[in-house]
Length: 337
Image 1: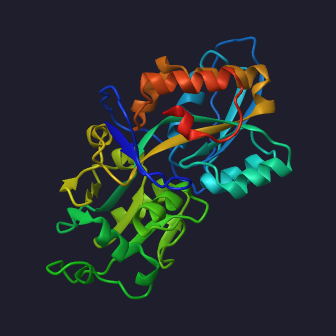
Image 2: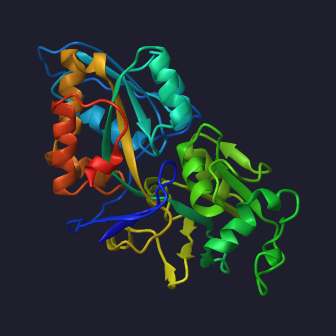
Image 3: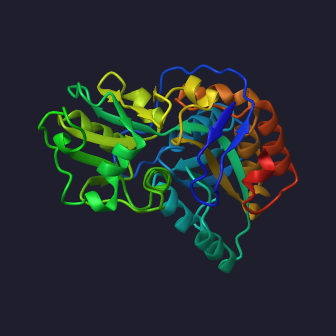
């Protein structure tokens, strides 16, 4: 059984039965704070046009892989995939600048209002699950497992300027400075983590190194012994030979982030659904319709696993595909369960 923490509109947990799925090594974004990919192929097709995608760094590797695969047989379609964070992506999406928005959380009420003000209707589509990962430097031998309370002690607003050393987190931890790395203010990962750990979305200390590019965060953590940060599981798997994932104890023992614990419903409260949002008017364009249907085809779930995420179960794929085919607009995640 799988249960996930509902970080925005949710006040309880839900469970669904999933099939067993294994993950393979991750591939993902490289380098810059804002990343754009453009892929082409020598293969001809009847489709042409451009598709603009922006948003979550967590969802980026999946959309990038889908775009590359799609363009192998549709080289007349140019797909750009940028990273501005979930919040930054919604700003562009609701301003009419993009066709698809990658999101590591549900759209917020204020974002819905921005879209409504611009006359933009959207289709909300779940595309997989993520195990939000808390990570440390490989030389960190002490923080193998942390409780949710200890995470709050480190990352809560009250910790700002006060909790500066690992020895302050738990008796027996060494006197090593904590150097924190985390997502920027436009990140859905920050929204999710702060709600799950600190109880209030966006409630966090601000004295940490931030970036919307998870590769930048991973690189920073690799360079400092006392470093500590968090980002999507796909980026941990990509850098797992240089970083350690911290197990999480919510009162039932130490649980690592991996497909098995997510599917078993034990990796709480940091397991989450991830999404794409598609502009309704854009889906009427043949190239966008073809790409999104390609994206939501269960036969392409290998691309989800290949970049380090967990595909949807069969019943949820079916509901998401029906939502797409019926052009059901608005946000209603409960209907998927």
